[in-house]
Figure 1 (cartoon, one colour):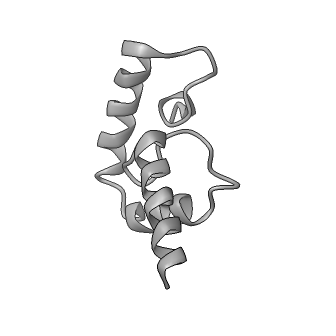
Figure 2: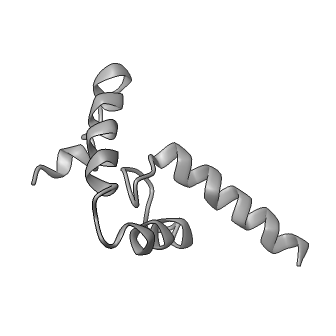
Length: 75
């Protein structure tokens, strides 16, 4: 499988990046470890900086990480 789908090379942006992300998300949606993959990505921001993990784009993962961090401060 072409990892560029999940981790587009630097310099790819715009419509091409979106296209690759959509393909990767569709692949993720049929994967048996989608939940574990997403949890790893959200729980390890120092390791996961870009790419599609657990059916979510890097932008979506970063939003989830920020929400989790804010919730952690409230406890």
